[in-house]
Image 1 (cartoon, rainbow, N blue to C red):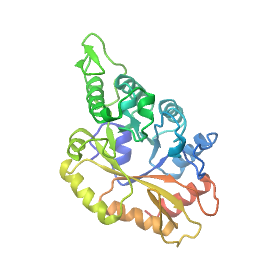
Image 2 (image 1 turned 120 degrees about the vertical axis):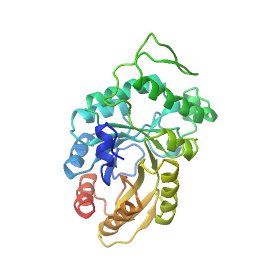
Image 3 (image 1 turned 90 degrees about the vertical axis):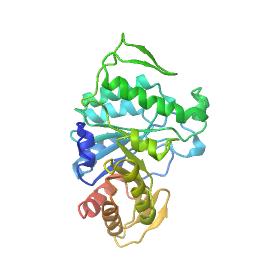
Image 4 (image 1 turned 90 degrees about the horizontal axis):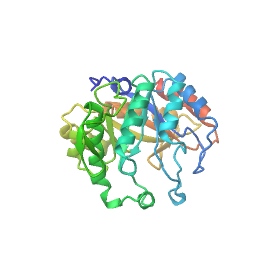
Length: 308
């Protein structure tokens, strides 16, 4: 799974690894505090997290209750890349139907170059209905636009002076997209189903990102993924973590994850690795005892990561 030349991809998948979603916060407010995110990113790297994940939420829609990391992902990626080393940088995930693929291709390749090949591009089709009319995009067309964008990205990264005609792009071979990525292509991780069949994802992606599943369901899903992807492409699971003060506390379900003590989380991550999950990206949540994000990161690293 680690034959890709991209340094971020190798960091993610040479062995079982754990990453961290922005915003790094334990607040339950929809708009997170922004002032400490760089400091927390550096601290997460010092603690041994393998990847930092950057969300793409173009517009804040209050009924959804989540403004994401707030910052534009490309600007924020560049800022964090300039202040970190070695850690993988992953988008989770760029909403392709709401962005022109040539802009995505140039921005992603630029961040990849500036970070010495640490960028892995997670992509999705979008899940907030009001965003589509806001950008003048038909929601029903997002699956087709997603496929078209993938084709454009792969082509303009790999080919000099490409010739390509789609509904969004008309390149006649007289222009080139610069810079090219550090590898022949940037690795693409599809999040969810993105309006595609799993067979399509297995053929066109370099990995699949999915949400929390119980172990029985996960085993079935992984078996299907290994079959359609040829058995070699990695699987990433998103896990929301509410770390209880009592390390022996058993699990209580929360949205896309669990609230539990560190002993349970260590055992759970070992179970995910044993099932064949290649990378887990955690999203820390509000804690019952009101601990701040720095303390939660330190406890998770010392009591969970070290045990795994």
